[in-house]
Image (cartoon, rainbow, N blue to C red; front, side):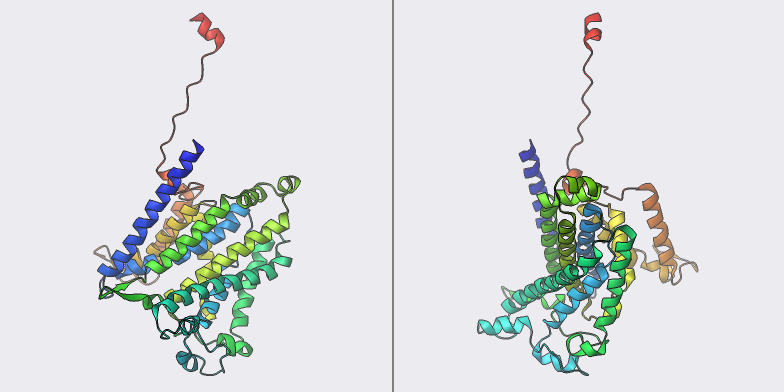
Length: 395
């Protein structure tokens, strides 16, 4: 019974992902950049990035019980690492106008040069972007390991304050002029590999993978997190969340598993930062404000603490509402209705009311602790209580 249930879960997840990948490629082919529906592509791209970061945060807050608020800082590290190693040598001088750049090559050029290809060839573009994203996650995880040594000995609100302070410190350090040859100081990083660059000639036809790339990378990372949650390490994380004393009594090393969960979460936050850099086209440390962490935390709570599917659904709904569906409330016209009430800032008021309603009527979030396969599984009716021996005899 258990094997058949797992097999069904795999089939449902695989079918959903295949349909999602096909949809992203189709949307890129059908919707033109000048179309009014092009905002849908933007929403899907950004929601994929936020879904990955939200799931990585859920691994800490929802599954391990660690209240961390440093996701924006680790996303910043990942975004800068990706951008620095993805800027072609021909763009280095124009980007680092006020500094002598330390890194004067890109992974794309290095890989293509290794195989004797042109600097802009597709293999180097794909492998270079993948390598830069992995390095972005690794650097973020390294910082997490260093910071976790003292910070993870704190609990609840103290841990949240410490990680939030780290995010602010990292933002200030990356704008420090002394690090300008590496981070470009307070200036923007640009000219690196972006989502729009993933357009290839296939059979004489130009095919764009600008939406497929973030969705594919985010979904693969989320699958890895799901496999981790369902492993013995994931069960140890949940045990720590429920009761640290009982978990330690069962032989679980608290600090080791907390450090592991923290580093893994920050690794995927770094990858999410790299994807965000590809989406935003330019990167600057000032963009990674504490409000970005609060938005991700809101997504986790709305989707449901302990639900990966809930974080993904809430990411799409949050981005779609805040940046697309309710935008007309700021421009004077919404759903064909024109009113003086619809002015700049009114969108945030309505959005806040919607969030309050969701929190009031969905105390455990939209999904609670349910996942995607649970939506397709029929509820079993409770079995009838067996008749007592005396009742059967009297009848």
